[in-house]
Length: 154
Image (cartoon, rainbow, N blue to C red; front, side, top):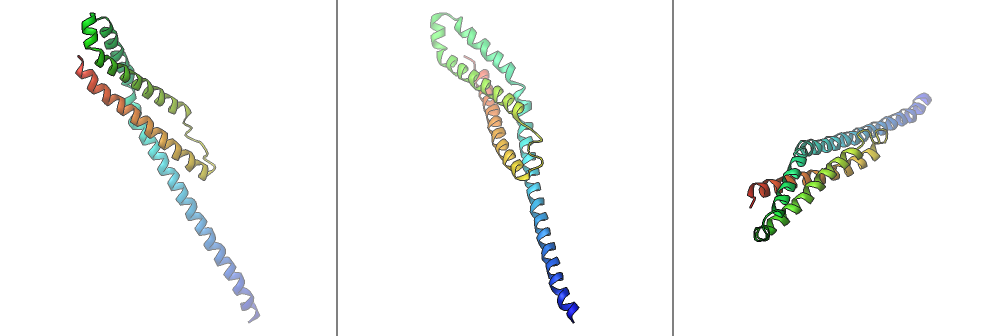
């Protein structure tokens, strides 16, 4: 009987320890899953923005050519085209910002950042997700603006 009484607390301790360990494993897996999900979202944002950003240099060149062409017009035509020129200059700034933002994000993004610390990795990937979303918006927005302005011409 003494052996059973002594064995019960030991058995109870082992069961509690096993349950706590299982909970930690589930939490760890949950955290790992969250990090994996964030990583996929960051890469998805990049995969949308990056190929589109490849169009930016050609659009910048076309925009600059149009601005230069307007500057060479006779005074009256230049005056009439002034609102369009202002829109083109704004577009050029937006395209330049989108290009710079994409390049900066890619230069600064560290794929393996905090691989050994899941909490830090989740924090890092959350911040990077926000950054890449802003970059994606800048790229897509400037391309949309370019599409409407460069087709319109004057």
